[in-house]
Length: 279
Image (cartoon, rainbow, N blue to C red; front, side, top):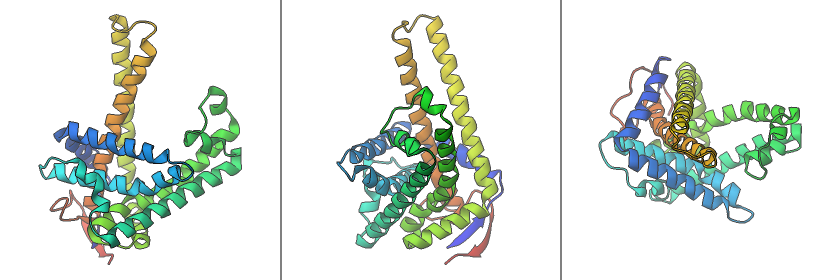
């Protein structure tokens, strides 16, 4: 397994690839993303252990979307069976994915726990859905500080786990080693990932502008009544957010393909140079 170093401009290609592969199979990719999120939400409702269990399953859910994108890349229709990818490839593979999920859950809860030191746990409660977000809460200085602390701490956590599901699945790398390799790959390709993040920020911002313009136009045309306008606009925003999130998750496989080049996903990286052997 070799690490590829790619130019910073490759980040834009990753975004374009995610959008393009989503629109190859828009109904299938959107449905799979919705089913994944719905399954995670249902699991989180299990008393006592639900939220932690949902966190444990998140790497497996990410892997499912990567596999679905790989199917679409190769011109195949991704079926709901991809959602069970982590559970169908042998006991050892399943154990590794569950260990990876447990490590993610511990890391995420550690981030929330540290943020709670700054505001008494208010941000964590709001983020985890245990309390509503109000204007007073959002304007609270302690809440804002805890939010920024959580964001700063979550960045290295996300780098650790960004490639880890793919490394475990396609290369058979043990969970702890996959975290190390994932972090190294992200750091060595920092420029590409920075451009990737900025490009997605631009896509989401543009989507918000488009929805605002469409909503204003529909309001002028009288399509929405004064009473139904807020809920209708909220529905449009939620629908667009789901579509864009699905496109984002569809793009993750391109970042993995270009960094580690699994043959099951694509025959060659977009562009870049192989610099060293990891294992």
